Image 1 (cartoon, helix red, strand yellow):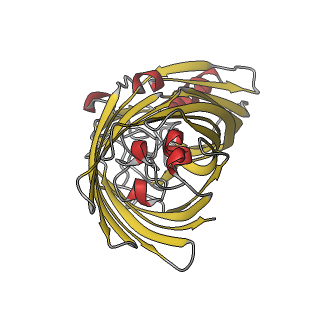
Image 2: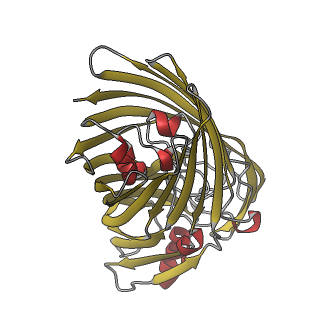
Length: 415
C-alpha cells in the first residue's frame, strides 16, 4: 500500500497542472485575448491604454473614464487549437496522441456605468484562464497524463476616478472560480495500465488589480496595470480504476500561486487616421514554480511540494489601428512572450515555451447605438521540447504543431 501511495503521489505531482487559454499555452496562463477589438485585434497590446470600450473595466479600470456614455460590450471567442506532439523516445511505446487540443467557446461581458463626470463603475465576466489537452489513453506520455481540463471564470467589479484632465486611477477585484480535471495512466509493469482521475476539484480566489492612465497631451497616453498574486487551492475527488491494489485516498488538494503582473502601455496618435500602440509586461512566474499536492481520506495522507524551476517572463507588443471615415476601424498587432522554463526543466503537462502572436480586427457602426466587431489571433506556442521520466518510463519529443486560432465577435451598446 505504501508503494502504491508513493507511486500515485509521484504520478500526480508530475502532471496535475495545465494552463493553456491560453489554454493558456503561453509564457503564462493569463489570457490577454478577451474577445474584444482592443485585445484580440492588437494581440493584447492596446489593453493597458484602452480608454474607448467597456472591456477597460477588466484590462485597465482607469481607462473607463474615457467613456462618456454607459456601455455594454459582450462577445464570444472560439478557440481552435492544433497541438501535435512528435515523440523521438518512447521506452514503453505509445503514440503521438494526434491533435490533442480541444475546441472551446469563451464568452465575455463588460459593463461601464457613468456615475459622475469623474467617476465610473465597471463590471466584467471573463475567462482569464482555461483549456485542455486530450492525448488519449495510448499517448507516449500517458504516465504523466492523458487528459487535462482547466476552466477559470472571473467576476470583477471595478471603479475609476478621473483625478484631473491628465490622470485617472482605477482598481477592482476579481473573484475567480477555478475548476480542474485530469486523467493519468498508472504503470503496473507487465499488467495493463490502471487509471487515476481527478474529478472536478475547484476553488474560489480573489485577485486585486489596479491601474492608471496619464494623458501627456492630445496624442500620447500612458497606461499602467498591476494584477496581484493570488493563491489557488483546489480540493476535490480522486478516483482509481483497473488497479491491482487500489489506494484508499478519496480526496486531493492542489495548490499554487497565480503570478503578479505589471504591464506598461503607450498609445500614440500619429494623425487623424492612425494610432500606434506599444506595450511591455513582467510576470512573476518564479512565484508559481512551487506547486503543492496532498492526498487525504486514507490511512496514509502524503503531501509533497514540487519546484518546477520556473522563472519570470517578459512580453513586448506593437499594434496599429486605422480609422476609416467615421464608422470603421481596422487594427493589426503582434506580440512576443518569453518562456518561463528552460528545455531541461519542461514537462509535458506544462509545456510552456516562447509565444508569438499575430492579430487583426475590424469594427464598424451599426444602426442607432450598436457597434460590431470581428477579429482573430493566431498564436504559435513554440516547439515545447520535452525529455521526461514519468513513473520510471522515459519519453522525449517536441511539438511539431503548436498553434491556437482565436476567432471572435462582439456587440457594443451605448446608452
